[in-house]
Length: 399
Image (cartoon, rainbow, N blue to C red; front, side, top):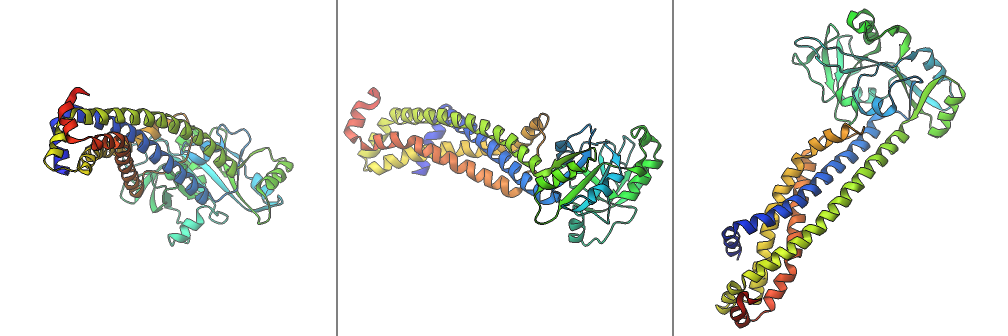
């Protein structure tokens, strides 16, 4: 029966192509939305786990925002006095406070970082964000000529990279986080301040800024038993002239923003699904109509009603299945361009497609297409199976 159904499909290539195209478009959009939104959700969860800080302190006059600081790798030359750190440590409810300093690489020549890339300097003594990763990688500390690389930044000399006139060894590469950490180099605070002080080209960027006397951000972990909102209020009372960001609010706002985009996408896909289902029902009804004589002949030579029913369903599932496979592959291929396009207008955390998610998307898209084809062909298959062989042969295409 499968061979019989396949022969009929190849005989009518034009009709088969149109049916496959309908299914392909529907499944492609579904897989595109599913893979994108699942990657986004995974990225948000992972970034929450690996960010580690409950509160982010930025300079009050910062030209950037929390979204940019947390979820992009855009170099941010923002600074506040180092004295802010000591004041924050005295605030009630603050358990740990660790400073960071943002500087950037500059356009340069061969074998060095040749684009503006963010460098985050951290304090080995107080850090609680990177230290768990260092311990997991069996690194007690970093040497002055060592750095940690985000998973998406390159090395140009094997395990070495040139940054601001110095050559550093990459001590380790962090796993993906879905945040700006993936495109960032991390180095010791004193090393970064030395580079920022002696590098002549960087002085043009750090105008009227003494790298030894400033930090760019302070990450805070609150004490057990305290609520983030209460600690934020305590910091505000200290009147430190800084911007205070509760990281959970940043994540929540980002989830809300992307949830609205996801809902619009899903609504459009549902409308496309309804149109496709109606079109497929019409296609398979017409398919059964033009093949009445073939069905009558099959019944006349001993075929059962169930054979007619299976025949129509098999053709429908074959057509829809082929469209589903092709649509799933195209949908996966379009996820990265969609992410690049959306990131031009929105800031969000998202992980690259994992092999597991790709396999799941392909399987889900194919299964959905076969199910859609089978349901759309159910009515014409039942209707054709009920007809008597004599009626089919005599009436033929008159219906």
